[in-house]
Length: 99
Image 1 (cartoon, rainbow, N blue to C red):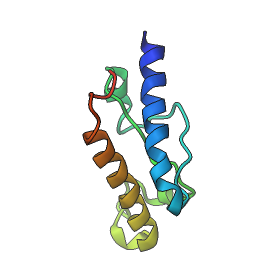
Image 2 (cartoon, one colour):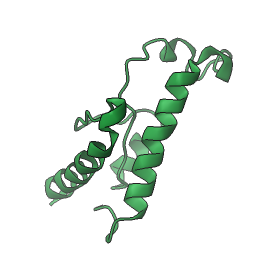
Image 3 (cartoon, helix red, strand yellow):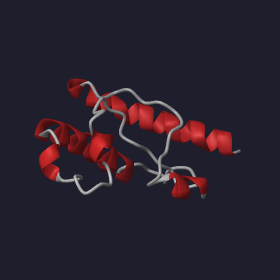
């Protein structure tokens, strides 16, 4: 049953990603998680992480250097657009995401 819920969630997210073609942000992969969201996902809460090519991010992530001035403003704008599309699209679904 868990596999069916994960597949359903994946398909919903994959369908939403089609709205991001113009900014080349349509790739969706299954799996993942991370330190910040894995505990929630282990309890059935749907989760997602941004998949990007910003390898420098983890040089600063959760350190004293983790400040806005080390980020590329265009990358931040694009990431905000991606999360906005997903947030509004999920909020507009007829049903809750599967848990």
